[in-house]
Image (cartoon, rainbow, N blue to C red):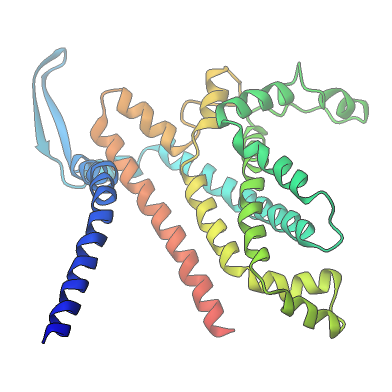
Length: 304
């Protein structure tokens, strides 16, 4: 009887301690994440009616799904969604491909100065996005770019900040800033592979790129899935680089380049309910894409 009571008291004390550690995080999570999301969803179903053209009494009324219908009919918002989606389809695979390649090179036995290269490749991520955007704007704007002259000498006349190139230039900035971050995640997964597996594969005649492709890459698949989901979410939240380019009056950048920029402009223009509806739609699209990719990879893994 005494032993049972002691065990129960020990379990109860452990539970109390666990909740004590979880409670601060839980309160912050509810206050900073759950509450704002719930408030945005609530605001998306209401609209503000004004009594007169020049102000007067305001009343908040239930609008149903009219804000969502208006958001889907907003050409600027849908164009921004398509623009960011096309950017992600090209930029995310390129970025993760480079990150995987660099991680495999660092993990190879012949690699030298690994710490130096890890630090060097990670440094762009440590640089704030706004500063990186300003730096790249100087490197890519037509009158200042060091690439304009050499390209013009071989007959290629282009402006990387023109409307036709601005999306590719933004993709270049994101790739430069986040490749090193994703490389470290993949490299950490490579370091967790037991060395016995590589040694056994080498004894069987599998070495070099064959070892990397047939042994290492399948084993770091969870890390690749994780970085892909992070990249999908990050692409949907794209804001800093286009906003800096627009503030710098780059001709190809607009105030509604991304969905978040369009939502911010609506919110500052006294349309918070429509902005909330667009934010909810963007969150739903991001949720569908990220979880859809997770389910797809899980199904492929189960079939294989």
